[in-house]
Amino acid sequence: MTRKSKSEIGKSSLSKSLLVWYDRARRDLPWRAAPGERPDPYAVWLSEIMLQQTTVAAVKAYYEKFLALWPRVDDLAAASLEQVLQAWAGLGYYSRARNLHACAQRVVVEHGGVFPPRESELRRLPGVGPYTAGAIAAIAFDQPAPVVDGNVERVVARLLALETPLPAAKKEIFAFVADILPHDRPGDFAQAMMDLGATVCAPRAPGCLICPLARFCAARGGDPRDFPKKPPKKARPFRRGAAFVLRRADGAVLARRRPERGLLGGMTEFFGSDWREGRAEDWPEKRGRERAPCATANWRLAGEIDHVFTHFALRLAVFVAAAPADFSAPEGGFWLAADDLRAAAFPSVMRKVEACALKAWDLPAPAKPA
DNA sequence: TACCCGTGGGA
DNA sequence: TTCCCAAGGGT
Image (cartoon, rainbow, N blue to C red; front, side, top):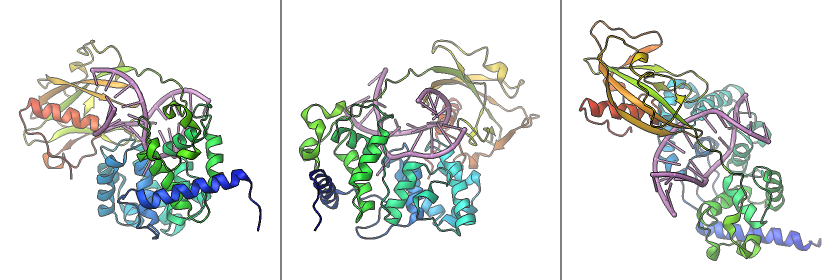
């Protein structure tokens, strides 16, 4: 029998304590297989993409919708990008949807519709970075891959009382996880670390009294909330703009599609001015009516909407008008029929514009999309 | 490395 | 109200 060093015993004990806790306290999630069962790699991949920088609560409904619309990766690959963007609308970070679609097609064409089990191959797929590749390899294929997300970063930073701030500390965190990884249950270990971070080792209110790793934790001597160390955040700039909702007598509204790349890439929007930096008090009248898609319409101000993006805040003046009878959609524009409004690929900011316009016309707000 | 890229909920 | 941030990836 080989002799183990003290630190090896400690690490083994840590992993065991974590898995014992997980077997008792694991979260029941729609994409999670029953204990002892291997989940569908497609389902794991789909959930992991959706969960990137997104809360479990926000993902659940979208996950169920996607799985109902496209039960297998072949189905998703056969769908149009437009359909996928429509289904993704409201979830944010739309490059994920474009990469999701491209990835499904790659899996079908280059891998025969079967997800590759190796982390190195998963990593080459669009939208699959270091975290997601490890997560799929570990959870769907039980490969001993280190899985480091925001939860794990926080848990490990506290366990080690890491003074190195993120993101510089990532290498050290990754090495630690790789070191304590139990090779018999790598999938459960990855999910256990994330569950612990989400439910016990929480950012603001860590539950140290019920934590299965408390006796291993270096941050317990002080305030665990001091970890991980993070760089100061930058101020969020403010931008101003105008949006124009032109409505035909039959209820159709004028819309256009945003460029494939960049902010809200590929999504549907109303016509509008550019969004320029300015003060909240500045009235965008000069960039308002004169930028309208139809000069002869009788535009009136319906109100303003506020929206916050990752790196700037936006206030849009919403102008509405009835389309003149002789007006046809300008280059790049199209009429969105009233019956198609609910399923359109409007991002949340455009849903706010729509709601503002409907209210101005005294029309009922649309029901929540299915 | 630093920046871009959404959204909604909780404290 | 304001701030924080949640299973990150691409460039």
